[in-house]
Image (cartoon, rainbow, N blue to C red):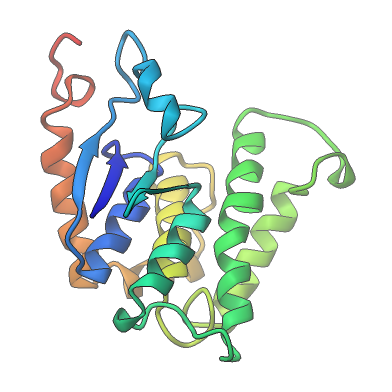
Length: 211
């Protein structure tokens, strides 16, 4: 049994895409992270900060997108979305996954909030360094971990799409647009987008109803 805790149009949408890529059955539990009264305290037993995403698989709780992605892609290795431990691309794959959570996201947040700091004052470094690294990485590789699509792309592409096209925090660089065009043509991505749109229509925050 696999249960996925999700809020539409949130950071957990990248895990929704991953699940569609893996094509494994799962039960979706909606968490209204934008509810007026807040997320129920009972959810803290699943996710300590009451955030999404989270999964429970055969009784085991996994939180944090990088951990969930590694867990699922390895557990359902028949989908071919994770390089094996002894493959050369494994290092780049793990690096890209953790980079999204540990560097990309916090650097974007600091940039949007106008935080002024020196690189060594925060472990994730500067927005400029992050931007330069991601741009160079995608200029030299078709995908996050090299020349094949992996589960890491569900995370990196989701982050680039949101921060460039919605948040407008990432500059619209050709290398980013070309990368998104490659990954967003995938059927699983389109299925996940459609499902998220349907789920969002049932949430008061998106539908215009009173919470």
